[in-house]
Amino acid sequence: MSTAPVRRSPRGLAPTRRARAVSKVTSKGSPKAAAELAASDVRDRILDTASKLFYQRGVRAVGVDLVVQEAEVAKMSLYRYFPTKDDLIVAFLEREDLEFWELWDSVAQQHPDPADELKAHMRWIGERLARENYRGCPQINVAAEFAEQDHPARQVSQRHMQALRSRLQDIVKRLDVPRPKPLAAQLAVLVNGAFVSSGLLSPEEAPGVLLGALKALLAGAQAGA
Image (cartoon, rainbow, N blue to C red; front, side, top):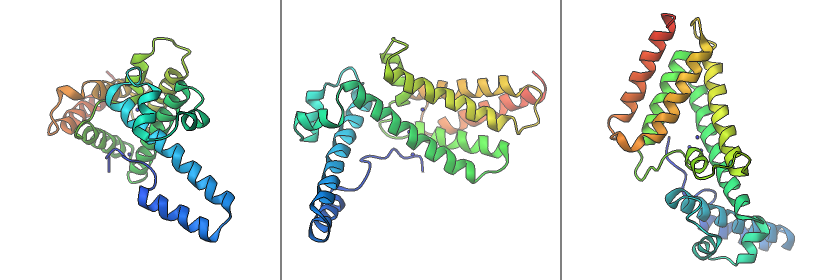
């Protein structure tokens, strides 16, 4: 399931700000601090580049040589921060997971009423699907590329999807419905299904489809269906 619902790209500081930060530390701080900041910049550049390539092309289609070439770093630098390609994939997914829940929490804080919160989530998720060049949920995409249940990347994806259902269940428990657990499961299927089916929805209809489905599910749950 990782950010208004606009995908953050590139992430972190802008290159010019990074350069100024390094210059500032070099002139006023210790060489060690400057080196640490420069190292962080290299790691971020590698992860930014890999994240973009993984999302656009799929993780299996992208090798470390391409990441190194696009990031303009030495291969030794990549392996210093990410000893294996799997480590790089996991870092990509973990950052996407963090960004997704940061946005989720920011929306939740604005809507104390559970029904309103659910509507707000469906709205921003629908808007997320309508973004230009949207290629689905990174967590679902990666899980589909790895059949091995014990693969570290698939495990990150599974935790993300379990967290989605858990968070939905926490919201639903605050609603006056006789069977909250099945409703939470249905909502999780709705959200994940929307991510997978994003290519079938026009930007104009995606939020409305999600809100309409939510309304139907809530009505059925309140009726005890």
